[in-house]
Image 1: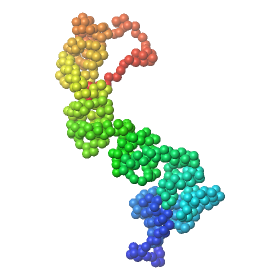
Image 2: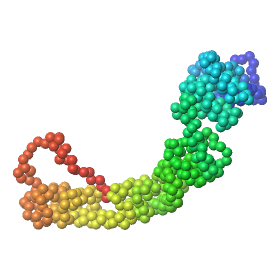
Image 3: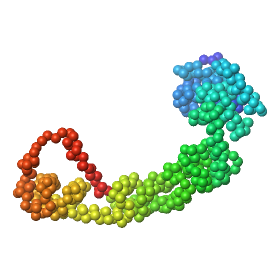
Image 4: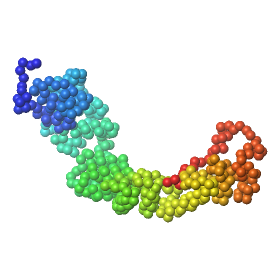
Length: 484
């Protein structure tokens, strides 16, 4: 315990001195949490406060690992030294000392660079710390000295001689990430920007923005033209819709166009005219299934626009939504599944969809007559529809033969399985009509065991895996498209 110490009242009424060097050279470029941690630590140093790293982190509402990262940042800047991480202990250093260049950079290596860099800032003397930051960036990013000087000159041309080194180094590191490391690389980068001058002027005029474009805006334009492939007239068309709202809003609009596959001015104009129509259609569909969305942009982008691009008309989509509601499908994703199934069937209009449903109802009537003939008193199921389609479409049997087979299957333990065996046997015998079926042996009509293949003259043999692969090659899956 200390022999004497400040009272809490005294501490609350006293002051913590902050060096102007910190305010001028470091604070503008640090994040909020980094500034809070540095100042709170400075306060504790000034007041003689003795707190643990955990207590320090809790006071600032951050994790201890994040606190370590923050003070590592200040250690790299030369303002503190981390003495221990467990327990966490930090020593604050003199800011005057932090401004001295590290010994690891030999002065002769950067002597020419220092002269040229200082020449670019004739109105003020660069500090040792600034030089050091440039050295670090060049060493870490492998940027050539001449390339760095060209980047500095570009930033001065863009922002004026008052531009600070954190901004310049941010540009340098971003360009280095793109592979801009040599003077030739910088020259090509600047040429790219220069070739965009006329396009940039046109976009600025369309946005109603005065003055020259800044670096961020040039980067936006490069992305829109080089990466996304928009032409000047397309950008101007989109910019006019964002007049007074700036590049960030324009970027959002172009991002939507890019994702929707809309690239030309003509497509944009058509898209905008269709957009209101698509929103109205979205409202109709939502109302039909009983849902509500305050914002329709997502609904249009994810559902309505892709449905229309498939070739559906408005009446067809509203009709499908109505049928989905009647079947208990009350989500847009549910409707999307139904839309995909009808698309596979090539049914894109209201009439074709209704005709399909009529056919399904007629098919259900035929299936129900078959079930009645087999004395099965239940509703038609998806499995019934699938099996009936195989009998009629793939095996080629008429409704009359199927109903006749059903009458022979009454009172059987598994009537549908028995019908299936009967029809399979008749198919192998070439039966085409009810009369042909009635002329078949008694066992086949009564449902007795179908004669073994060998009893009809087939030579039994063992099949290889290759034989079976060939035999099964023409079989196809039967998706139950009707069950929607």
